[in-house]
Every structure is written in C-alpha cells, then in structure tokens.
Length: 320
Image (cartoon, rainbow, N blue to C red; front, side, top):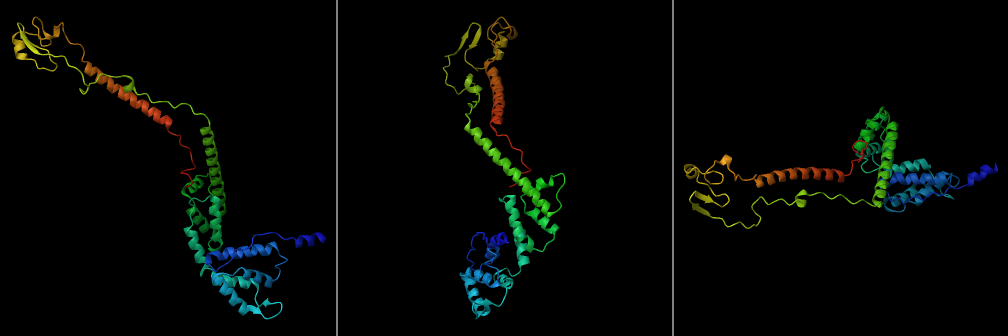
C-alpha cells in the first residue's frame, strides 16, 4: 500500500504548454500539450475544475484571451471555491468549435493530399502523414494510395521492386522506413569513405601525353618562316632548267627535244631518270600527323575515363 501511494504521488516533469493565441494551426498542439501535463501529474489535475482553470491560464493572447474572459463570465459558478458548470471534455469541444477548422475532415483531407515527402526522411514524412490521417475518415486502401503518392519517386520505386509488395498502409510505412534508413546509412558511409580517401596522400596524377609537343614535325602549312634558296630559270645547250619549286615545265618543248620530264636533262626518259626525286616528305609528314592525332584522341579518352568518378548504384533513381 505504501509503495502504491508513493508511486501515485510521483510527478513526471514535462514542458509547459505554449501560450495559445487562438490561431487554428496551434490548437491541436495546445490540446496535446495540456493532455501531457494532466497525465504527468494526475493527482493535481484529477478534477474537471483544475483542468479547465489550468487551460484558461495559458489562453492570454489574441482571440483566445477574449474567449477565455467570456467563458469565465458565462460558465464560472459564483461559489467558493469557484466551479465550472461543464466538464473538461465539453470545454475541449468548445475550443475546437471556436478555434478549430470549420470542417476538420475536409481540412485533414486537403492537407494530406498536399503532403509530399520532398527532402524529408521517411520517418519525418510518416509523422506528418499520421498527423492528419485519423481525421480523414478514409479506409486503409485510400490512405495507402495517398501515402504512396506523397513518397519520393525513388523510394516508391524501390518498394515496387520488392519480391512481395506490401498491401496495407502499415506495410508501406514499414518498408519506407526500412529502405530509406538503409539508403541514408549507405550515404553516410560513402561520405566517411570519401573523407578518409581525401586524407590519404594522393599519387601524382598522370599527365596527358602530347605527341605533337614531344615530336616536332616539319611545318607543312607554309606558315613557318624559312629561307628559300635563290633559284632562277636558265637556258643552256640542252634546254631550259627550272630551278624553283613549283615552277611549271614546258612539256611540249621538252618532248620535242627529247628531254626527261623529271630532271629536264637529255638522254633518258623520266621513268629511267637517275635523278628521280626522293619520296615526297610533305605527304609522309601529313600522314604521320594524322596518325598522331588519332593516337592523341585515344589517349585523351583513356585519361578522361580514369579521371571520372565511378557512378554509385542507388536504389532506383535515388530517393530525392
């Protein structure tokens, strides 16, 4: 008996309610905070009168203050100690009528349809969903469908990939909580892994090989400055000698005098010319430059692929 009495006298410390000023959005929280106080110290708030008085003491701003004053004028009995002529449950209903939504069901449905997980965790989304869930008067299937619509697309897709999908609202909440928690744990580990990797000494990054810089090819564009030999055209006993580059040869004259089309000398044909020019260096260089360009492109692609971070496998598209 003594132990039961001591337990009954124990008081749990809870936070005091916030001042209620009559705003509709604050009413549910205010009533919830009051209920916590009454449960924490049941002996002090055992009767209806103490509960009503305590609630009125926190209605001291805005429309709530005027309402409390009017309430006391109407419902407080002129006796000692003062008593109210209604119960606390009736008092609570009066607060809901005066400060709550005009249609609680319609209001809850509207808020639930607008609710989206967005950047919230699955747990935060579930709490926000359950705030309005009981007031909608919807059945389990309707609530399940709405819960799914509000989830982030990636998380919903992950639940759809399960071997056996949940068929109830409770099942959807359980899997959303589990998969979202696993994904967030994975992200945290990845962050720690990257941080540890950055803290380690990094090997020198490979420099891209530039063959064009390493091997200087002869200029083939004609833009480089170079000294050309002073050449001139001269006529001698065998015909005309053309010393300059690219100067045309008089083929008719050469044919008449039986001159070589290659060197311009008499006594042999071009195909048997002992002075046959060597391979065209310009063509060789151009061909080599083309091959070097292709090699450079391959090397650049390889180096770029090594620099790119590997993509990480996510649950579907990710949860955001």
